[in-house]
Length: 315
Image (cartoon, rainbow, N blue to C red; front, side, top):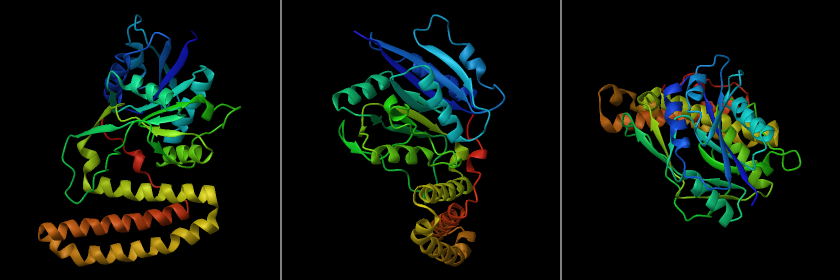
């Protein structure tokens, strides 16, 4: 029986303690006898802050851990480095997980089982989130995906996803992350393009990872900055795919409506927010979020890049 080569990819930047917990969870995976599994850590920095985490992995570990660097700061640069590493090491499957996550012991087995049983090219799994501090009441939490194993999806993130090397090989789709998207959405864009090319993306409800959300990430101004960055990235991704004229036609009016509506809402409820009234505060921040989405749309249209990811949450 031939071996199945699997590379688990972790991008990291200035968070060695979180990375250490992540790697420990990957070394504890339940593996099949015909799997050859390696963990590849890509440090998105010119300084090897996390090299020690890799060097401290016991030599007797059944899972080899490799260390790489991508000095160009930016998420898509690090993501593309993982794809280059995957090709160079000849992996059949590549698994993506974030450095602030910890995988259940059966995580990899669940992803692989779903891929095989459902003939999938990409498999995405759920993230359990725990918060160091509760998010504000006006912030809407992401609704988890609910569905059986093998449920079709048309996109996926990179925080818990398995993909076949067919997507990135030169004799396959040759896909890469869009390096213009340095402020997010590069993962959704990547897998949306894979879906449009006919690659099968499915859901694996039992492939859990855990993520701890630092208190800094749920501060009001940080959440608002995230919304603006996401809106800008979505619009820029559309402009790259469809061209500027079509993207302006689709998003410009929407951006104007959100700017005007958001500004009016903020002005209307600001006095009540200053007085500490809960409903007014809620409406004020909903207006701030709408305004942020409008600003993000025009940042994307004019390629004025936000800097949300220049601030790192956690350690």
